[in-house]
Length: 209
Image 1 (cartoon, rainbow, N blue to C red):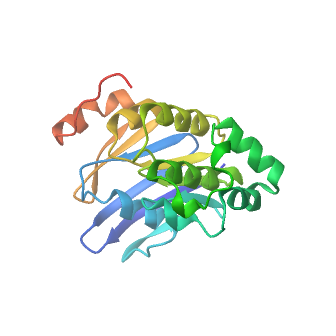
Image 2: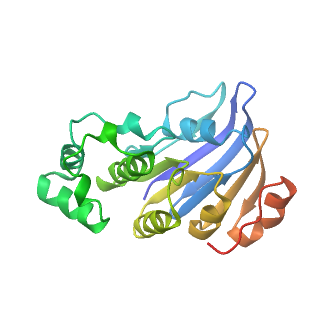
């Protein structure tokens, strides 16, 4: 199981002394726009080098970022998944399980934003990495598709870290939520433990998801 250890990390004026340990389960990074959520994920993934501090991370990390089209390199969706899961049969089974078999022959670059995001998430998790990092995984998704993403992620026995402004989804899926504001951690705990912190930051209190 993958483990992240973030120790006193500073990045320009974006992150200010962030210390965090993540191992197992689903951890969501929540906070207002500009709080440093995406930068923290990129530091954890090894895409941004801190100005100060240290990060220990798993060797095998799957990821999906805000622009899902950056995940694609192949002419068709089927080819993208076949390379990841080790063959067309497994790729078709995965698409069938998500009711996406009808887009197997399409170019991933012509998919709708919602479809592209789903395929990007599947690509991130299908090869069974030690940890998965997902940046805004519900953007462009209906409630039905959010539920399917929930089912997919909760079925995984690995470390998952999500950055999301979708408070309802974060509270529904997370074992733990870390609340960021202005580059520092201002709250941390189980979903019920951080409701007060989210309200304090003016984030919408969710209804049942």
